[in-house]
Length: 209
Image (cartoon, rainbow, N blue to C red; front, side):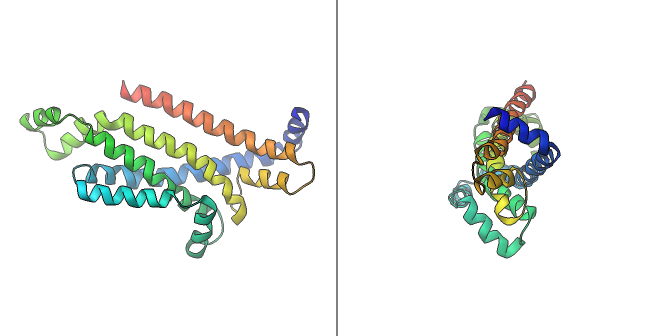
């Protein structure tokens, strides 16, 4: 099995590398867009209990839709190709980032905020110099979880012509004795998710310090 996988890589190395890059970029773009939306929104709803409940429920509802069904629905609006996968990843990434941002801001000690106000800090100074630094660990944890999940979600892109490592897995499933091809696609996916988790974990530790 290992020899067959290595042989596949030696013959199709350029193709596999291309699909790894494509797969990672689809996941990265979707999560980045979700972070741009969810982090500010998380700060906004953190002090608004009624609104936060509705927003988190909506994000939870999106999360319950299976990935293949989500991609199928998005085809009607976005069409075929990688953009559909990016939008799907974006939707699935909202919950972990929004929830963690909301929790991180809510956990900021009220006494610290009172001291900042007493020192004459403006709203934006408190936001960027107090709340954001204290909540950054939770926020990065949400981004980290979202990106790991996004790498798995991006694999369904093969069904709509988006490419990625799902193409290799799909090829292995469609040929006889293709288990080595399936592994050739699955291994980079798993390693990518593991590396992302480790790297973002280290970044999180450094920023928290």
